[in-house]
Length: 97
Image (spheres, rainbow, N blue to C red):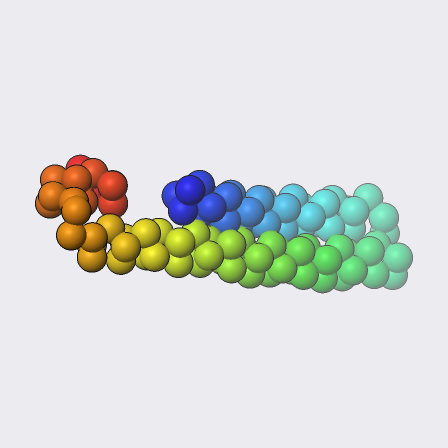
């Protein structure tokens, strides 16, 4: 379960980077299509939106991935301190094998 949560967090971070890149490209395209002050204004607003969306999704993805890491660490601590498991069982449960 912890690996899945970390994977979701990483996917959100990647989506944030992709979205920011696409919005930045759209800003440059809009500036090339619309001349004058309007084109510059559209470009500035779109670049600001790209930066905001990219940073927001990166931070959200980082927080979600951190929750997954905490869940994995909790499981590892519980498995490591269990007197009923052999070293081979511990390695298998903690995905070290």
